[in-house]
Amino acid sequence: MQAIAEDRIRLTGEKKFCDEITALSGQPVISCYQCGECTAGCPVAFTADIMPNQVTRMVQVGLEEPVLRSRMIWLCVGCETCTTRCPRGIELAKVMDALRETAVARKIKPSEPSISTFHKTFLDSVERMGRVHEITMLAEYKLRSGKLFSDLLLGARMFLKGKLALIPEFLKGRSDIKKIFNKTFGK
Amino acid sequence: MRYAYYPGCSLHSTARDYNLSTLAVCKQLGIELVEIPDWNCCGATSAHALNRDLSIALPLRNLAIAETMGLDVIAPCAACFNRMKSSNVAVNENPELLARMSDLIGMPYSGKIKVLPLLAVINEIGTETIREHVKRPLENLKVAPYYGCLLVRPPETTEFDDPEDPQSLDNLITALGAEVVNWPYKTECCGAGLSISKTEVVLKLTHDILSMAKRAGANCLATACPLCQSNLDLRQSDVEKAYGEKYGLPAFYFTQLMGIAFGLPGASLGLDKLMVSPEQVLTTGVRG
Ligand code: SF4
Ligand code: SF4
Image (cartoon, each protein chain N blue to C red):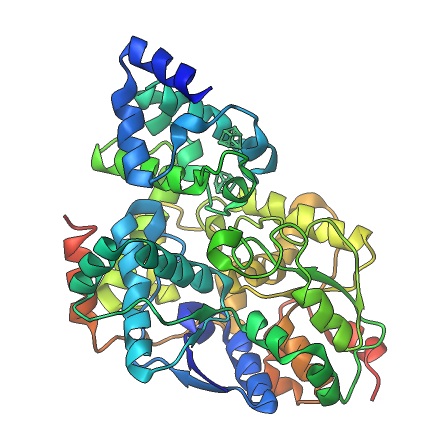
């Protein structure tokens, strides 16, 4: 099965993308045999443009653009259901991570901008303070995403319940964190 | 029993009640928790979404500090636990990665510290001991045990309980004197990290979970994750509005249920912080 799939891909000369994602994710994407188990259990499949099993197939045959531009790779919440159930031992959540990382590295405009902006804002908050401070993070997210009025009630509810820390906690080891970011994300 | 304690960002803010109740019940059970000094955010659930190295390095710094304390780590938050454990597994599988990451965090780390979810440690203590601590059995409470995804998945990483039909929380709830509701959504995903950025997806997933719990006959839920708890509790009124269904299901942290059964005062467990009031189920449900 695997040999046939590999041959076919070699014939069409589109193995490079598959190799790249395999290396980055550490997952044998080529051994996916399209059973659909990943898609059956995926919590966000109902709202996605392409299904998780289509993602692996498209990687196999080198359809890079449509995968990297898909909404699916951003909607994936990393719940690890697919990873747990794949009969071929492919940790698909890691493949999704690798695809997102590749899309960002290639500066491809994310088709779910609100999600990518959220991740970015979250990480910026960690980079600055070493921990996440919800109020400043959410305020910044609102500005960046333009969703100024969403979740105001939720915020008010959390505030009334004393669930929001007013004063951010700054780490002593902030410079360590900054260094980690510079050498990984900031590269 | 002494452990390094990793509360994580949530337990210092939105999930203070989880922090309070964890500290309170651990004290009762003689589990000593020493907070990891100067711990940093583990990066869940955004770091792995964008950068693999970052997602390994951030938790590893905390593990390296724990190693200087000579203690294994307890992480009550399921997302933090999952990220710390995956990071630990990744460096243990690959010595070259471990060397590169130690260099990155500027601290030596052997890879030998264990990372445990709080529920695993309580499981270890055993239901017999738990029963001995119960002063007010949670009679008439019908609890839907909700494990969520990250506590038990993927099993090769978490090395904890069963990924499809876990039992640890079920056994604990039974030991506390409550009834466990048999339902199929124990490990269904609530959409966690999309709560702010893609709210409508989370409302749908949370609706599925709440309405299934209700149909199965539950009068409350037990959770082990601040992300799940906030989706189920804080967002419950939003879900009710969106789907025109009334659930009225308090979503407790399992540590709060333990504290109530142990007879600890509600304020010490952060019960006042629950959005869906637990008053009714508790007054009709708990004896003593
Ligand atoms: S579960 Fe595994 S083998 Fe089946 S379609 Fe998904 S990735 Fe392919
Ligand atoms: S990890 Fe992502 S792709 Fe896999 S089941 Fe969960 S949301 Fe779907």
